[in-house]
Length: 181
Image 1 (spheres, one colour):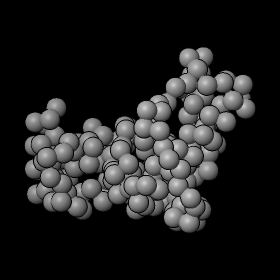
Image 2 (tube, one colour; image 1 turned 135 degrees about the horizontal axis):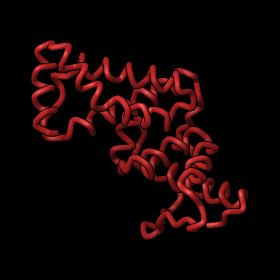
Image 3 (cartoon, rainbow, N blue to C red; image 1 turned 90 degrees about the vertical axis):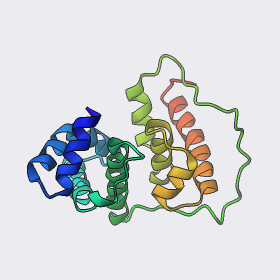
Image 4 (cartoon, one colour; image 1 turned 120 degrees about the vertical axis):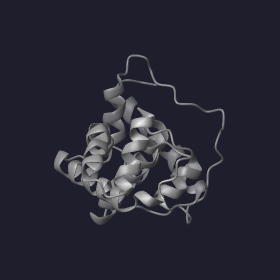
């Protein structure tokens, strides 16, 4: 598939709309699911995904072959969703004025095996937006703190603190739901 995608990218850069539609067809379903993780409304998620594809095709010349196209596209979709959330004026508070906690690097994400992935996702959805974004980017998308820092335009130490606090809030949420951790 990689050679096929590379050829489609090359043709898309030349303005070939059929190649662009094939790229869209190859990636739209996965990107829609990613958008749905951030935006609760399917229509908003679809709109964000389509906006992201427009950004991709307009900026295709900036894509570098040293990363996978899917990863590059995923990051644009996530950033587009975050932009939409910010436009809704959801509160994102800088933690610069709060005391930082010392994080335990050996601390990991352990959940009771009785908890389903869906139940964890629902609990994450109930967190405040500032924790929700960092937890999703770290736990679900697999980004590290430097990448989260770039995506959310926050310091890496803020990302670490928000993740830690989000994790504490998530554990409390799961305990409240009688799942225990």
